[in-house]
Structure formats: structure tokens, C-alpha cells
Image (cartoon, rainbow, N blue to C red; front, side):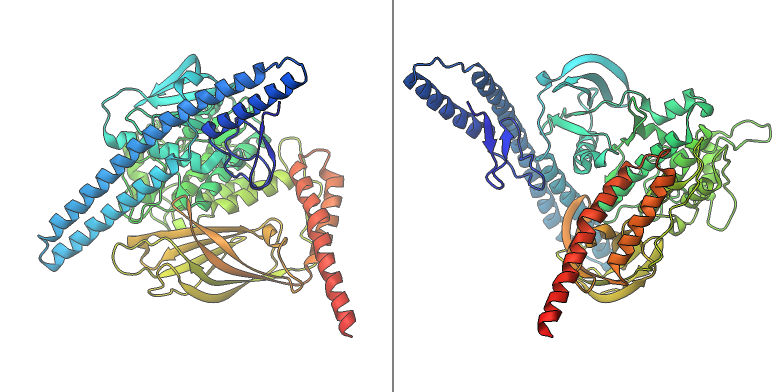
Length: 623
């Protein structure tokens, strides 16, 4: 008997227990468990009738077992629906209380200073309500896992408010994380739910973030989360218990690369970690690193000021310690730089700082030194052990005291990928560096306008502008005063000698009053994606999604125009890559390069040649 279910969008057959279509580029929701049970029961009925008519005996054990499993899933779903209903009622009550409080407060507002204070209070109130709405929406999408589906094996050392257990779920080693006791404050519970929501948004980060399998109790005061088990624990313990000579530089670079990719993923969604450290990097049995520790991570608040004490101060950027200024992506980059140094020395940050007696500085004295550090001074220095010069330079740029001088996570990823692919490390010696193709390809990137952006204003209209970054080069649009959620810029910026395979365009959409209103959203466009869409004039115009606080919110219209022959550039790139692999391929991992080369030779070049042929045919007919 057929126990699959067809997707109504793409007609792909799916396992009956699958919640969404597994077909590539589909992912449409499949019917709920109640409807699946009805479908199976009807199939069973027809199956039995057919067998009876043919004189056979039905063996329905598999189908009956599947129906029973679906019934259990249905019961779990109904329980989840009850939890969500409770969560919705709680949210409605909070909104009603906020509305009543607003009416009562406005009745007593008098002077202009009172109005300013009330404006700020209402902005904070709106921010909190918006965050609650986003949290509620996000939690609804997280798979429900009943505690009975988790088979306990052992307890893990916990900490603070949490209890950790290792067990089996769905045949996978899984970690159960739950609040250690009842009676905790609402802020602790909501914070935990927010971290669950954030992990769900990151969805494993392409293998760089610890994967969330599901959760339960999200509508109650005792939420639980089920996540991927990382066998070797945190990076800090690994470095402390392992001799530097026992860890290859290839392993260190791969760890650094995965952490950088995780941070780049977060930043592309307009999210910041805020508490990155070696304690929040976990390793599996193959030393693959994945980022965790999202209890302090937070969606970028509209007016989120620096919070003293968030995160371990040894990995904190100096600007976070004086209680002024907005959190931005650069605080994660500072922590990433310290982590790069840590991978070299195996020591916690600032371990080289000693007092007059040669003893390590106490936390209070060290915190004061970091807090008082300002750009242009050499108050803070960093020691290295065996790191190559390029690595030292990258780490020092990340820990610059000037936040604006720090590279983006995308830039860090690009440099680490380049060195892993071409550089010298361990017993690998770079015989041939990968050369940029002789044909020069320039790009003109136009930021035309945006639509349906996040509204960051409780009162008034926002004044958006864009900061562009491509390959370390920066540009900035004019400010559209009162542009609101649908600003227009219509500005073009030249970027010379671009690499359309490796480079990624980043656009931070900002409000003019950064200190008060912060970032509106983030756009990330790999140039490689435009190669699949350019026309005969080497031009692509299209809308790119804007992410705000982890959610897609609006779009920006961009125009890419390449000057030079894209086809010639790609042909030269393919030839150079082939030569490079011939010399270096036997000592390096070139699997990712092979994926890119397949795209170049089987997708990009044939498409461009087809376009050129079509244009030539049209021109011939016109002649």
C-alpha cells in the first residue's frame, strides 16, 4: 500500500511523517497529521477491498503502525496548539495592559520635558511589544518534541539556571536543555525562549551553528529545547587541555573559518551574538566548530544601548564597557579577533598582561585597562605564539580599538578561505598562488530604492541611507530625509577589479540618527548570484531581500552592471583554477573549488554563450 503523500505544489512524493516537502526549491507545507490519518485510513479501506476482491489477505502491519505514529504526532500537535493559544492570550493581555498604561500616562503629561520622557518611554514600549510579536511568530514555527520522545542517557555539567542532559531523539545523540527550577522570573523565561527562537532562525547556519531539533513547553513557564550534541565540548576546554603542538594550523584555520561563517550568517540577518567566546564554540568528534551561547544574543533593538556586564569581559569590546553607544556588528568582530589570538596561543585573552611582580593581572585591574582604552593609543597589546604574519595582521585588525576600522565577518571569511586554499601551513607549502584572471572586470552597483522597510520610529519618519561594502571597499549613499519605509536613493558606485566568484556585497541600511535609532536592516548579495541573471549587456536589475532583527522585512532595488567581458573573465578563471589544482590539488581540500568550477563550466559559461548566440542571431536577421 502506498504510504507516501504528494506535495500539492510540485507533486513530489514525501514520507508520510514529513511536515514539509523535501523537494529542492519547494519546502511547501504538507497536510496536518489529522488529514494524513484520514488519507491513510481511506487507503487502508480501499486496499482491503481490493485484496478481498482478489481473494488475498491484507498485511496492514506497516500501515497500521504508521497510523498509530501519526495519531501520536496529532496528539503532540494538539498539545502544541494549546500551548500556543495560551501564549497568544498572554500576548493579548500584555498588549491590553500596555494600551491602558499609555492612555493613563498621556493624561498626565504636561511640559515638553515630560513629553520627551514619554516619547522615549513609548518608543521602548513599542520596541518591547514588537519583539514579543516577533518572538511569538517565530516560536510557532519550531518543531514540537514531546519529552517522551527523548531517551535519557546521562547528565552534563550545567550552569546557572540550566540543566543539560544527553540522550537519544529520533536516533540522534541529542542535548536537552531546560530551566533548572521553577519560580524563575519572567525575564529569565522569555530570555530563554528568545535564544530558542534565534537558534531556529539560524537553522544550523549551514553547518556553523549548533542545530536546534525542536522544543516543548514554549507556551508555559518551563520551556525545553532539544539540540545537536557536540562530543568534544567547548573550545576553551579543548585549548586548555591540548598542547599547541598537537593541533595543526589547518585545524585552527578551519575552526576560525566556521566561527567566522556563523557570525557572518548572524550579521546577514541583522542579528548580533554579543557574547562570542571560546566557551560558546563547541567541537564535535571531528573538531568541526559550531557556535552556540545565544542566551545573551539579541535581535538588534531599535534603541539598544550598551549593557554593562553582558558576556565575559575578556572577550568584550572596550566600547561595551562604558555604558554608552549602540551595539553593532563590530562587537562580535572584536571577540572574533580575540578568539583568533586564542587559537594561536591556547591561552585566554590578555594572559600576557602581568603586574610588577610578574603575576597575571586581576580581573578588576584588567577590566579597567580595557574600559579606558581609546583609539590611537597603545594601551592594549596582544602577544602571539606561532601565528603567521598574515594571521596576526587579520587578528589585530579585528581587535582594533576603532570599531569602524574592524573588518566585516564576510571579509574575515574571505581571508581565511583564501589562506586555507592557497597559503602555507603545517607541512603544506604554497608552490603556486591562485592568480586573479588577466581580464579586468569592473562593476557599477546602483542602489535605486527600497520598499516596505522596518519602521524604527515610534514618532516621526526615519531618514534612511545605505553603507555598501564589497571586497573591503566602502561607499555610502546620501540620506533620504523623511524617506520612511520606502526611501529612494538612485545612486551608482564604481568598484574596480572585482571578483564575481569570491566577493559578497553587503549593504547596511541605517537611520541618520544612528545613536538613537540604530540599523534598519541588512542586505547581503554574493556577486556569484548575479552571474545567473545578467543579460546580454552584462546587467542585472532586481529586488534583494532586507533582513531586520532576523526576519525578512522589505526589499531594496539594486542594479549590477559589469564592465568588460564576463565570459572572458570566467574562462580565464577556469583556466587558472585548473592550473592551480594541477599543482596544489594533491595536498589541499579542493572540494568547494570543484563545486564552483562545475557552476562556472556547466551553468554560467553556457548561459552567457547562449545569450551571445541569441544576440548574434537577432543582429544577423536585422542586417
